[in-house]
Length: 215
View 1: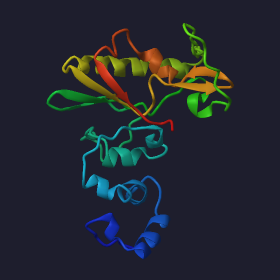
View 2 (view 1 turned 90 degrees about the vertical axis):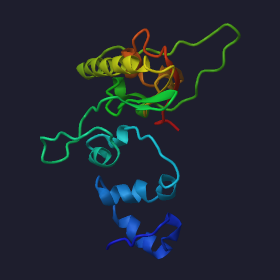
View 3 (view 1 turned 180 degrees about the horizontal axis):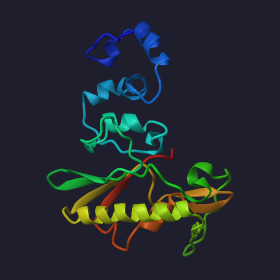
C-alpha cells in the first residue's frame, strides 16, 4: 500500500499507522521509514541533527540505508549502484565559533568482542581517598585488533588536524571513547581499540565527546 501524505506524524490516523509500520522492515526505504523517519517526523521538521554511524549501520545491518539517507559522503560517481563502505571518512561540520568532528566507529574488532559481550557482575567497591583503580588492558591478540588500531590511528590523526582550525571542537562518535565497564567484577576499558589509537595530542583541542551505544 502507499502511505498517504500528511503534514505531521500526529495527523496519521491510527488505523493507517497500524496497517503500515509492522509489515515493513529491513535495510530499505520502508524499514528506515518505519524505524526512523516516521517516529522522528515531527522532530525532523523542527530541528537539524547530525547523524553518526554506529554498529547497527554496518554493511550487514543498516549500512546501505545509512549511506543512502544520512551519510554526507558523496557516492563514487563511477559506480552504477550504491556501495556500502566498511569505513567512511571523518567529516567536520563548521559553525561560526565551533565545529563538530564526526567519526565512523561502526567497525570495531576488540578482544573477546568487547563491551557488548561483557559478563554481568557487580562493579568493584569505592576506594578510599587517594586510591584508584586501573582498568584492565586488552593485549593485542589477533590480526583484526592490530588492523583496527592502524585504521583508527589514521582517523584520529585527521581529527587532530581538523581540530586545529577551531578553538571549540566536539568529538561525535557512536562508541564512548573514554568510558569504563564492569566485567566479572573488574573495570575494563569500553573501547580499547579507539583508546589505543589515540595519539599524545589527539584530544588537546576537543572540548567535549558526544557518544551513545551504552544505555
